[in-house]
Amino acid sequence: MNRSPDAHDDEQDDQDGLDGQQALFGWDATPSPGPAPGGFRDSARARRLLDIRSVFAEPEALASPRGQQIMARLPDARVTEVASHWGIPELHGNEGNIGRWTRIKTETLVLGVRRHPVTRPNGRSADWIAPGVSNGCAMACAYCYVPRRKGYANPITLFTNIEAILAHVRRHVRAQGPKGEPNQCDPHAWVYDIGENGDCSADALLCDNTADYIAAFRRLPTAKASFATKFVNPDLLDLDPQGRTRIRFSLMPAADARLLDLRTSPVAERIAAAADFLDAGYEVHFNLSPVVLRPGWQRDWADLLGHLDDVLPARVKEQAAAEIIMLTHNQQLHEVNLGWHPRAEELLWQPEAQEPKRSENGALNIRYQVQVKQRSLTRLRDLVTTHTPWLRIRYAF
Image (cartoon, rainbow, N blue to C red):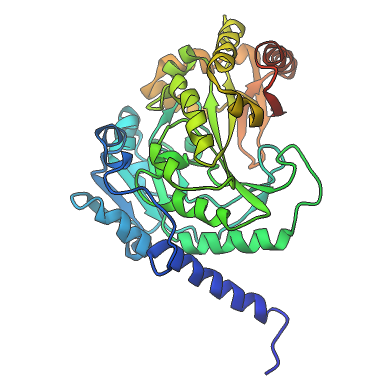
């Protein structure tokens, strides 16, 4: 039988979807390892972060195998079906939710379907931004860019069509072939950021999306996954990434984190976890992010870098690299923050030192003035050279 040139690809896509289902839902002899029952996700500490009582769900997401897996863990949650995970008037459009910003993150979950997975080029932190399996976060970092388009609430949205997302990524990786030459992302592998709009460590408290993404890249020898996190989830130590996933622990001075990184793991805990994650098979990098300029910032960053040098073992230092990301803020987020955490805005909103910036997605944000930013980046690079000479800076932005 004659077939079109695309017939093989269509057949392979179907097989990708089948392979994904097998790996995800236990139909294969070697299923993806996920957090064991009774692991950290079932601990009292995890429940303090996520105590889901209300679920907004697209019907298709609710009926999917992953949706059913999630809901099996939430038997007492109230479920409200919605037409779209993106626009939920009583959640995103309700100005009265500002005062419940963190409570909503604790008690509310949204389930949706990512209908058109897209992988797009990046070239800074990663070669590619892969389609994430979540949007929003259980944590409450005051500078987070994700809620800028949502309105008055930003709980986790989980996408349940994980098998379709992974099939798309496998096709994309296969189409790239081997990486031809080194770049700042990685010398050998194509790097795919899998957590652009969420935190994969926190997502793993609710379902196996993160475990399945890590398992997928374990079988992709020309690529590796990458995600940044501010949450230490010990369950991830059991996922056997075999060097194909890069975890990036985001760091800032502890005084800033206490004010700005609400509901996250303490900075010292993130640093202390680095060796455990390396030994578990992850590549471990750091994000020095965001750098917030205020009186004493240079002293406190020097102290943080000195702590890194003091406590990290040699095996972590030998493979470590870092990204430096200066603070970017936003007028709409500033106004939302004034309603639930105005003290944070005393650091974040500094119009005398900031200027408008049009982001890649068209949003109008606020960043430090170019001269201020460049001087500060130069100073921070000098601090890295002085206190952590082993820490390679992959890029600074």
